Amino acid sequence: FRPMPRVRPTIAPTWVQPGCTSWSGPSCLRCAGLPVPRGQAYLSPGVGERCLYDTTHLSTNESPPIRIHLRGRRAYLFRRRWVPAGPDVPHAHPAEDYLGAIDADAETIPPELLSLLTTAEQAQLREKVLLPATQARAAAAKREQDPMWRIAEASRLLTEAAHCSQSALVPGSSLTSVRHALDNIRLIDHMPTRPVAPPPRPADDKLAEALVAIKAAAEAVRNGAYGKAPVEGARSTRAYRLWSELYRAVEGDERSLLRALQEKGFVKWRKG
Image (cartoon, rainbow, N blue to C red):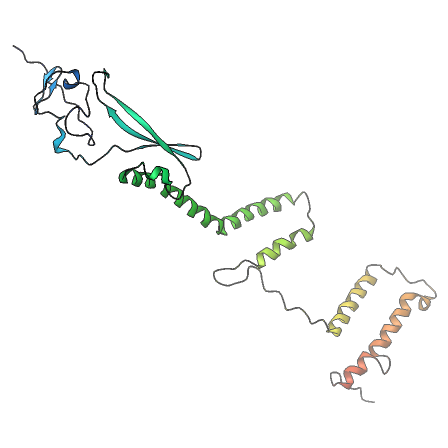
């Protein structure tokens, strides 16, 4: 007599209820309607030493996790259960019951679902759907207030613009808004983004304005804005008349700029 080879029993899930009628493995003879003494497992083709379907040593408070199917912006919930074999069920099989759906970005569990779910199922739903949605909202809010990625993107675009401007010049006025934006960026070390410009001259600094005007006039004459003087009659030209008036205004008569500076002590009087 040669004994039949032993087959390793199929281990039941940890959420089964006591007794093998709650869950049946492929070799459970009880589901086939044959009497199986408690404490034994008649496995085909062999005999086990212990009935692994006698699950009284396992926790009876656990329930199978619900299945959460994410599709689009909705999460669909299904409760799993095991249908044992019976008079109207020739073969045991798993089944799912539809519980409902929830928005994938929901902040709380809707009341209609809350009443259907157990405490463990509610915790699973919070972990799989509500918590990721909360974290995603926090990350989006943080990105909305983050200037660094915007600076990096602006730097990339300006680098490309600088390259393109080598063949297509841009007007200087187009950079006014860029410079203004750079000036308004607050830095960690409180240093300005650009060198500090000299303070603007007061609007009533007439000497500075006169100096700028004279230098500009000299540059204009030098660049040919008034042409060239004729060989004869140069003193009759408009340019010469303006120069004469300018000379008198600077140091010609009692109302000249020179006399005003001398009266205030900025320029010394000539002796003799």
